[in-house]
Length: 397
Ligand SMILES: Cc1ncc(COP(=O)(O)O)c(C=O)c1O
Image 1 (spheres, protein in one colour):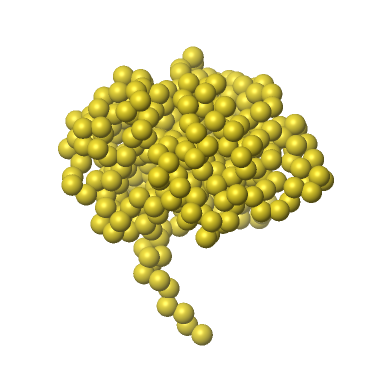
Image 2: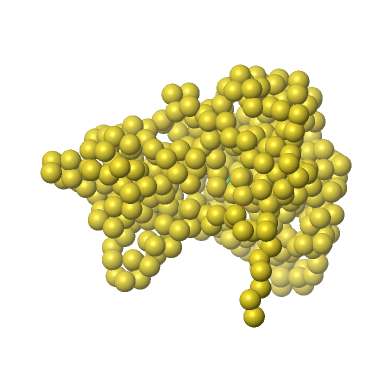
């Protein structure tokens, strides 16, 4: 039987991150020694006390449905975290727990975007934003953060992109793929534009805990009560507590939006997996030392690898202050080695240097590649020297 697919999925593009990762995996299975720098998840185990709390909840019989927007105890743990980390005060009806931050974002777009509404997405962007906006009937409006401005958009650019149909703007700080962090002052200026135009701010803070070099993460919602009211914060335990597979994320903000999201989830997921919610309670209520240990390990790797990366001929790189990605501009290296595009250069890195990186075209900037340092230092050093050898050998031809 031939089934016609619904129009809404016809233009869906599969995640570019997954395509190269799949190819790298296939090569590995054939016995090829490929180093994968595509990972979007920490390479650490979920901390032991979290595993124990999850097992305990199962053994005690907590394996049934929960309220759609999350267990009251988890919402309370999230509320306490907001107070402790960011001085933000939310009520229970301003929090919705979802099946990962990705699902929180998906649900948010479903409840705020009407057909033809516009959502402003800074370039480079996380691959799921445009697809999720389109799935909700919305139109992504792209604003390019110039590389010279560390990939950050300016208030002037934002103001220019706003129309009568603009519903929201996404701010992702620290950013995937660039690792760049907006300063308090920059956020204040962007916030003023949003308040003036009365558009919602979607602040994706999933990498909040992963900041380096003494940098401080600021949420735009912390800057004034008006900005808090105008902002939906998205966060979760995936990156902070190395819990990507548990699928727990959340949204915090305006109670009318949160209520609509909760109602929608009640007809799709019912609730995030109960055991994972108990694990997330332990993540927030338990010791935070493992979070700092993982952050420090990432920082140590960044410090070593960044200098080696920018020493490769034809590579330049804005120094990231957060997340676990490097996002070098490699256009010059691609040209030097005889490739017209960075996409082709990235394919050659996999096929010949045996290093898997993600081409920047999937994030909206075709001259860059994304390298994840969520892998051991040993592997990272090996990968960077393979890339360097490849570029040097090819440039001499
Ligand atoms: C910027 C950004 N937002 C959200 C997510 C989703 O995280 P999760 O659904 O695992 O909570 C990711 C994951 O890669 C991300 O990079």
